[in-house]
Image (cartoon, rainbow over all chains, first blue to last red; front, side, top):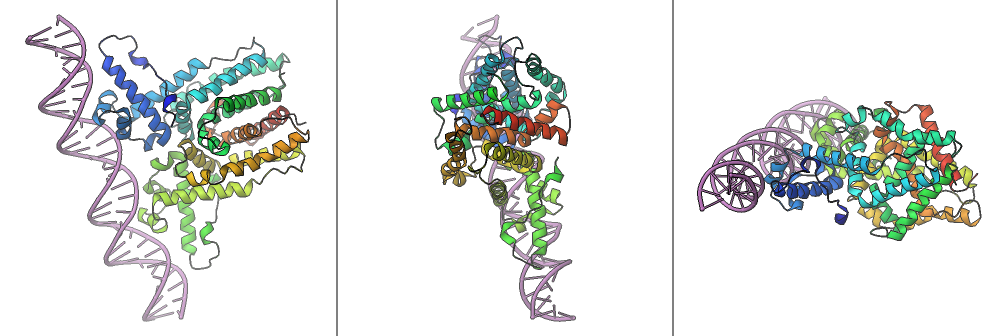
Amino acid sequence: MNKAASVELELPSHKGEKATGRIRRKNEQLIVNAAKEEFAAKGYHGATIDSIARRAGLPRPNVHYYFDNKLQLYAEILSIIIDLWDDALNDLDPAEEPAVALREYIERKMAFSRNYPLDSRIFAKEILSGAPRLETYFKSGYGVWFERKTRVFREWAAQGKMDAVDPTHLMFLIWSATQHYADFETQINAAVGVNRLSDEAYAAATETVVSVILKGIGVA
Amino acid sequence: MNKAASVELELPSHKGEKATGRIRRKNEQLIVNAAKEEFAAKGYHGATIDSIARRAGLPRPNVHYYFDNKLQLYAEILSIIIDLWDDALNDLDPAEEPAVALREYIERKMAFSRNYPLDSRIFAKEILSGAPRLETYFKSGYGVWFERKTRVFREWAAQGKMDAVDPTHLMFLIWSATQHYADFETQINAAVGVNRLSDEAYAAATETVVSVILKGIGVA
DNA sequence: GCATTTCTTGACACATGTGTCAGATTTTTT
DNA sequence: AAAAAATCTGACACATGTGTCAAGAAATGC
């Protein structure tokens, strides 16, 4: 499911190279993409090196040639996902008009759920498990990082541009509503009775999320 | 984590019995509760019969005495969870005032996330995996069931009691926002910088979700 | 086109996990 | 308190999965 959605990615550790490493880059990409599918579908424990290798079209020991062990491969993927998110979702700008900035932010998050559902699911599973392999990430400065993310809501509220809604929980509301379309795709498809939401249906979903939240916090 | 939240439950298959089966009931309960913790934390594949047995304080073959195999135990738990949800979350009543009924519905869903986070997480993981063990559930009449759930929104909108918001996506918005507090508890705690949201913080979360959504769909 | 590096692959050792079974023990019935 | 039923438990067979290694093949550098 969603093979087409897999992102073609450059592994950050090997970007400057030329001829040498050509094969390496190609195979690492094959493996990472295959591993994403497997981890997303079966979780860390359920995915096997063998299934990843088969999906990548490589013999199993070859996977070990590029990645020391399963945990390292998984950790690398988690880190790729987090980098991807950080890059794509820059902060909301307090200087902008909330109606514009927030709409754009939600639309981008929804596009993310549409285009990178595997990434979202891997991350979601990790958190559902208590994030045992993201301890550092969540301990070191995550609270501060999150506080900065929500500051914009406080500023807009102070300027009277939106209601004084609890910024923390507003952020969770936005995140949950948008990520839901990646993480719970199976349930959504079953409820709607399709194999995949059409572009039109997805646009309607986005519009619903945007309009309810904007109106809900008093933004025209 | 969340041991206290585990529900004391009656296994549906053995409710009418008396003295005989006393031990059976007690042990099945021990096993199911232990299995919920394990499945919620590690997923179907990651959980082992041995870890479940140890958590339940029983030797491993004893688990097999009560449950034929791992899949059956897991399936039984899924079915318990679905029954629990169905029982607790009856439909929204179109005859009621949306402001009252919807608030109560959201509050109940939030209470569920607070009180039965393990159940929510097990279900979420199953769906994230593509629900391979809920195929029947999602195929047989789920679309119809869901359509009935959303009908109330259409009726309220027709009566002018709320905006004509897309009922399907409104339902997803409510589900995602509320279940998020069970499923993403780890991330939420890290963001807020606590080990567990206080009752007050949780009430604030509930109030935020309720007020943004109600206002967002034009309900006073 | 030869030497060096990179990559491939089958075979192996080891670890963990599932489910079974038979005999022992405990609980319940009569 | 004897018989029957239910429960417990150690030991086993089997399957699957991880990571290693050494030798061979292919690609690259000179």
